[in-house]
Length: 585
Image 1 (tube, rainbow, N blue to C red):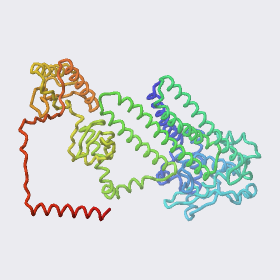
Image 2: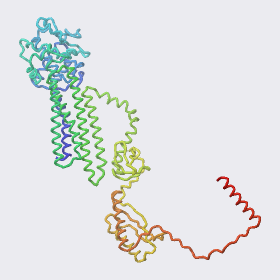
Image 3: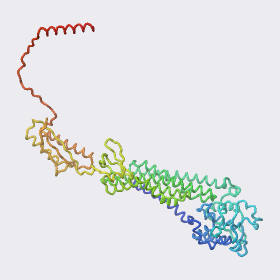
Image 4: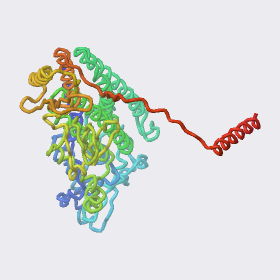
């Protein structure tokens, strides 16, 4: 398996994870809708009696008859303003079991108020009530079951009833089902696990910080198993990656593969924790906090893994792109890498916000209100983005091209969303905004098909004419046979008399892809010319000058006659100089 295939497998593992989680949620009732969306059931909830009957019928259909649509009717019976909407099945099941332990309801004779009796009521308490005091009076301190009428005239279980359903369930757990009803304990995986727990570790009186003893032990073992899964997954993937590297005898991607493997184990741990946390039957507050933390942790691990895998895939693709003649992929791969990373971060932020039950709809709609201000603030960024698109479509240059852009000269090393980076020939890095490229004049030396070279070859003045002709023609033949020179247009002529040499014009074009190859081929051409000069017997001239002095007669002797006064003046001057010399000695 090649590194590229390995990275693809990691991508599949990563992006199937959210799908699995969403698929798990899809098998449960859709709790994302607001309560107001359930007003279609208003006719069935006009009194506490109607609501309770509607609730019991719906939950039997949801659990016993596996009718998924019935969960929406169950949800309509509860005020979820203080509860986690994702826990509707658990909350409803606990309320159902408590009600079935209280009494067998005779709908013809029940004291529950009907529509006429409830006309003047706004709340109604089903439990505690006087008829339950004898058997369950001591359990009233753990919570109540009450109904409240909302502004639409619909009766629902109150928010406090829904919130405290778990504590009330623990209080009634060891009570028998009411006479006339069969045992309605729902045999789910969590209930099965709870039945296996010793009585000394569970119950309303065996709690610490709102959690039963067995739940604390369960959390401890869940964390331990998650850490073990992390280590096993990391070890497994590390062994596979090492085999892949050893099979291809290449270690250039070993570090990136090792980095990409690390967060996969954390992601597997998060998936395990999220899957088993429901088995512990945690209270609503604890469940909400823990699942939110797990989802944030899993989102972080997924973003980290996707980020590392993107870098790994980019390395592999860039390695392949460097081996192709087309340089467009050298520009495309970094852009795709940055685009994918932006989507990864966006996915992480959105999924993380949903995990924390942060409503991002107002934020998105708020962008419409502040869109104008945002557009002004992001003006330069948007210009640079469209500038990069224009560069990609127009392709005035590619990575590796030698360009001159408004006085900036160098080699293009990277084309990004915002800017293009140019490495100058004195090794500095210049960043040019892509918006400027749309209006700039780009002189692309890298797009030259031929690279011109003009110089003069000087030979000595004492070179015979026949050797001059032979040497010039030999240079022409070298150019014709050279594999990287233009054959249809070049000039080699004895061109001028120089100050110290006979000058031959060499005007030639090299057909090479870049400057480095041009230097290599120019060197080859010069060496061939140097060898030709040795074979023909011509010598290269260097700047020299010969001074010719014309012969002439010696100059006649000149006699100067001084006057007496001049002689006396000279004598006085000599004596003065001698006295000055003695004064300083």
